[in-house]
Amino acid sequence: MAISTSNSPTPESSNNKVYLPIPPPDGLYSENPQEKLTEIEQEHYDVVFSHFNNSEYKLPGFEDLDKAKERLEEVRKREGFESEMRRREWTAELVEEEKFWLSYECILRYLRASKWKSEMAIERLENTLNWRREFGIYDLITNDYISIEGETGKAIIFGYDVKGRPTLYMIPSRQNTEEGPRQIHYTVWLLERCVDLMPPGVENLAIMLNFAANGKNTSLSVARTVLNILQDHYPERMGITLIIQVPFIVNLFFKMILPFVDPVTRQKIKFNPNVIEDGLVEKEMLVKEWWGGEQDLEYVHEKFFKALVDMGEGRVGRWMGKWRVLGGRVGVKEWDYKRE
Image (cartoon, rainbow, N blue to C red):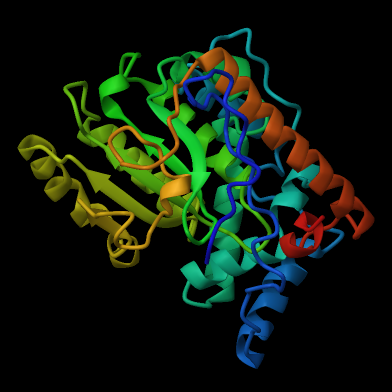
């Protein structure tokens, strides 16, 4: 399926360099690509939906608010957030952002990842709801806090693959900070921004990992932590991972971590592909450096970071407005509130 680049930002200089992210191809699908559920699948969905849509619903782990606050504070300290960074006041009721997150498609992603076992899907969803609060998705991992991690362009969300999936380029040689919790927070922040840029009908992302040039390689512990987060809290979000320029030591590194990756995810990882000839990303959507595309991207943090944040916040703001009109509850279809 061809992805139009007509919305590509106009280069800001005569040498045709690009400094801004490309807007999503929101008209990619004219009809919802989501397959119709079978009768049994619908029954499992209804069980999960009814559980969270109950007006009496309370999130496990927050019945005792004093203990919950202690737990949140312990996580804040462990994750290295500074003391002046204040926690949101949580209760056992779901807030608007959480109900918005619990979309029809979200429930289905967890059901599929749970082999259509409704009780397991409920448990996994509640684990993620707790994790999102504890990890600071809604309060601690702010744009200002994370900005320093993006200064060198070691990770860039730019363009879309042939299926319209936001493309996350990762360039370890541009590493600019010491290993620590904030690097993991930044990865989660990037995942959330990729979700913001997913067009209607698109539910996952493409990761482009390039090990060209020398630089600091990610440690095994950090890689395992990120993999666990992806598998536990972003099920079915990774569409494909393309890895090039893999040196010997990194190849050994992958042999060490791949046993910890579930078989479904492992099948989505491809080493040294020819992304253009293999029909994975169109040349017009691919960066020129290393990947051989036509987009001569020059990462200037002050320009790119703000544009990315503004683009995502604008989209989510519009979506939430439509979501409220559609009932403002769990189970609203992303397809319905994303379409213009």
